[in-house]
Image (cartoon, rainbow, N blue to C red; front, side, top):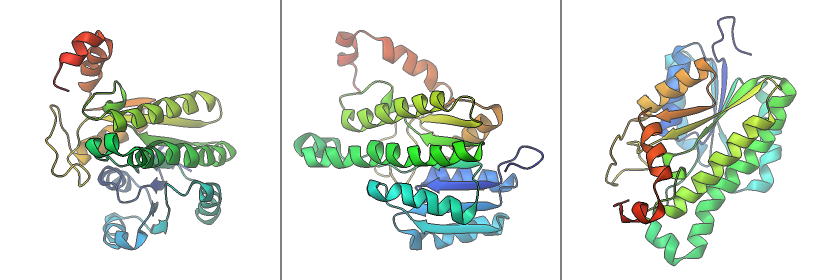
Length: 253
């Protein structure tokens, strides 16, 4: 449960190796979060991250094994994790891959794998999380989406389509949980300088994991259902989303 001041006490990160997730955990541990569970495909690689969060003040930091693509294990994983650690104030869905657009256009199996991680994996685990959070009667489920899902661009339409699906799913999930005590917040960052985007050309209004984390924490405090990072992207995408297709196709996107 949140403390008397409304601060998050317990966090489950699905995608514990995410730079944005780690930055968010730092912010929240600084604000009295004390239990952090980092679920990742290779939890043994998170020892340094766990030590950092403990040094910042967290009392329990536990890396655990989780595979976003192993959807048949998700329900059991969620139940075992909630049973072991208790209620979670915040569950952050932070896993995902960008993929290689040229490869996914040439190789349908690569496109399917991208969709399996970014969309199917998120749908699978989030439904089990929502069930447990509804049962506990409180908490916030946060999903890292992307502005790429606002309107698919030819340069990354496979990735963008997976984020569009994820975004719509979590918005609908939030509506379905209204009145249950559980909230859903969708985060739409632009280009973020992380290890996942290393080597890619940054886009205008690019940002950092720390800035996205600050936006997430602010959104949690305000009870937001959607967060843009940086906020100016809301207006940029509002314009792009409504451009006539012949005009949109001429843009270098």
